[in-house]
Amino acid sequence: MPNPILHILTYFGDSMLLLPTAVIIAILLCWKTENRRAVWFWLLLFGCAGLVVSLSKIAFLGFGIGSARFNFTGFSGHSAMSATLWPVLLWLLSGRFSSPWRRLLLVVGYAIPVMVGWSRLALNAHSVSEVVAGLVLGFTLSTAFLLSQRAVHPQSFSLVQLCIALLLPILLFSNGRVATTQQFLQHLSVQLAGTDHAWTRAELLRLKM
Image (cartoon, rainbow, N blue to C red):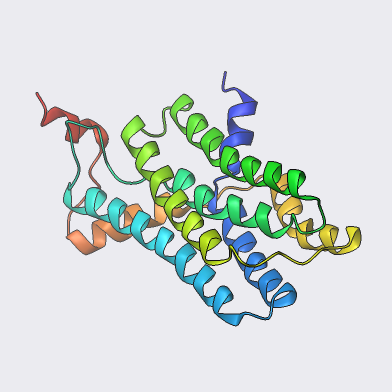
């Protein structure tokens, strides 16, 4: 029987939750900062994460481009996207707290994606190489954004503003609906490659024998 805790953890990396939350971050940046470049930089980095993940999956699903040696079929999307988003969101929402609490929230922002990656391994959804690659990609992008904002102290949110900012993510999380991104990419990959089926991990690993 599947462990419900694993599914809760893995949902922190699901596109159904992360895509709207990424838009919320952009809105919060517009609301709480005067630097519009930060908004566009955030959207660019988050979009880059999604693009790299998607291209790696299309390369494998459509054309069989992967590594049997490292059991790699593409970046773990849950790991990459969560590692891009959560550190930035927790940093942005930490403005009303003192420095020790802000640092703690940032640590939590980096810890959540690690737990997401662990859940993907426990659910046998990805290999170690795919999770590690996803985390490295996402943490590189989120850290690049945070470093670009190192001279900026995020403005404080009132409790009401904080609740409004988190309302949609909480509603999405409570609903629990998952995105159909993988199915879409499979269909797209088959169409692009002109094949009758998408490549599978089993087919890749057979090449190793």
